Amino acid sequence: MRVKRTSSSANLKIEKLPDGSTAIFDAGSKTVYSLNATAGAAWEACQGTNSLAGVLNSMQASYDPAVTEEIALEALVQLQEKGLLLISEAPLQPSRRSAVAIAAGVLAPVVLALTSAEQRVFAMQSLSTTAAPTTPRIT
Image: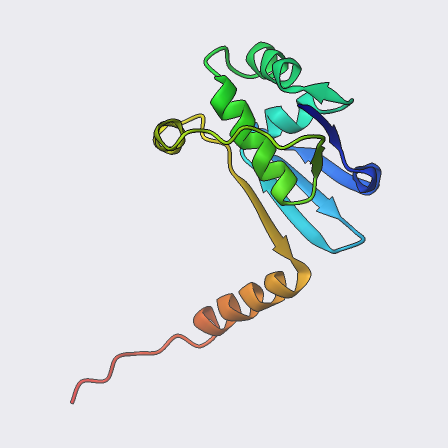
């Protein structure tokens, strides 16, 4: 399995945050991607075309030696699903048991995407719930 960043990744604005997470802004699609520290470590490991073993070694060296192949694979799959990576051949899917273990662990990778339309809806909902506080009426 070979992995590499998509060709559009050259146009992304990437910000590494103090808590280890990463924010990525795609000006073309106006989408913001939020990667937790585990997914951010996988993203960083994919600066060039790489293999799963290379990504795993990089994540263990730069982030946490406890990162397993299943965790690295899950991060890569999530990054591919969001269109940030290309995986040259179908990755082996983590087993159900390992997926449950990943989900329960603190190293579980998380990649979220929020489009500009979704951002506007969220902002409008936030404003509508905080703009006009109501006082309960006693009858």
